[in-house]
Length: 145
Image 1 (spheres, one colour):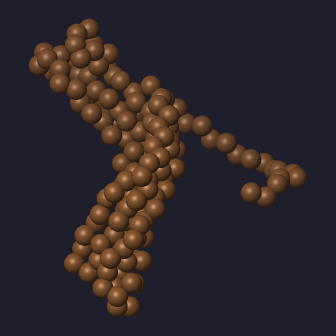
Image 2 (image 1 turned 135 degrees about the horizontal axis):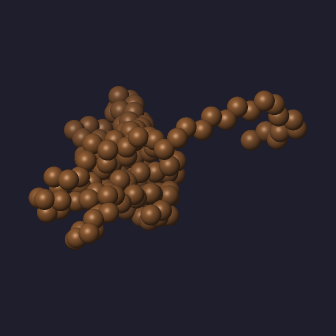
Image 3 (image 1 turned 90 degrees about the vertical axis):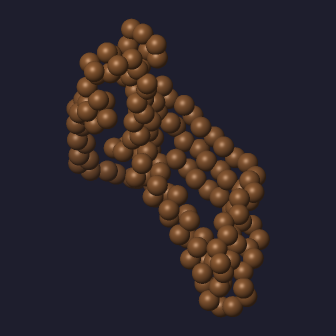
């Protein structure tokens, strides 16, 4: 199941630290989320688990609003570092948790007899179906990006 996700809206989130407050006022998120459902079961909930992942890093942008801080040079430097740290943490969390080869696996609650028959190891860490290697021999008249 592939889902195109787009979120673009104003928000009001305030991160409060002792020297500053950082306000997030706008968030934009766009990406294609893939969900695999396996194994298929003959009884409710019909699938034993879900794997959730992005094939590519989703597009993420956000805007910070007015920032309250002590007006010292150190506080202004901390604000700049805080903004950068927040952006890096969000991107790193998504890449390390949801972008292939990483994925989140969700176990569904299934009857005990069915759960005993499911190989959870292959669901959580599936073997690749194959490997494709592409080697570009040459290129001509390529336009710069």
